[in-house]
Image 1 (cartoon, rainbow, N blue to C red):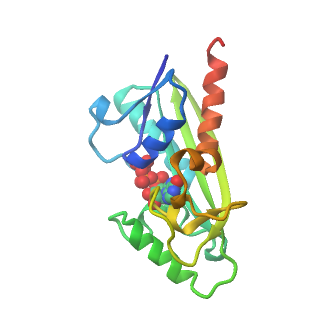
Image 2 (image 1 turned 180 degrees about the horizontal axis):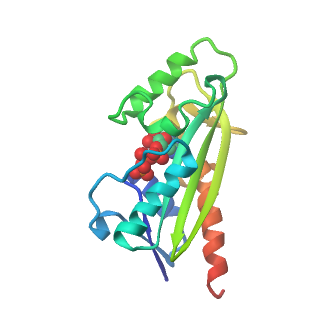
Length: 195
Ligand code: ITT
């Protein structure tokens, strides 16, 4: 059994990752280790933010852990909201406002290509590893669907005709940025233990 802390305050992420992991990898939440504070997230790239969030827990609490930093990168907006995805329309991290801001900025624009990106940073003893997942797709003209979180109602992954917010968690995990990064994490853990 592998036990690992997931350094996130986003319970939607926690749920998605928990569903995907095999039963012998047990996720420990920040609350489980008595961490209730806001984890600093002050870097300027998705990768460095992911490392910062995992490093904070490893150094302050001493646990092996991993973090997830994700963002939506829209071609026609020069990669915005990118590293600022959570706070695009303000520090209150309001998904509805974030979505409205994106739709307003893309209003009338033909090219609606975008990608979701996740970097998972894993601190295991003294080693740091990162795993990346990218999912390409298109931004819709209006929100569709009620599942998921964040920008899910306005993102249609390439090769599909429905948004992430119309998919079950299992369907989303099979193709999403986070699902792909978590698969790489699982492969890494599989190599560490006897089969
Ligand atoms: P933690 O830092 O505590 O993990 P967070 O929500 O602040 O939680 P991020 O800094 O990675 O996480 O913010 C990324 C934002 O991008 C997130 O708040 C969502 O608005 C959006 N996002 C990330 N993954 C997403 C997904 O799978 N579907 C839709 N939106 C997503």
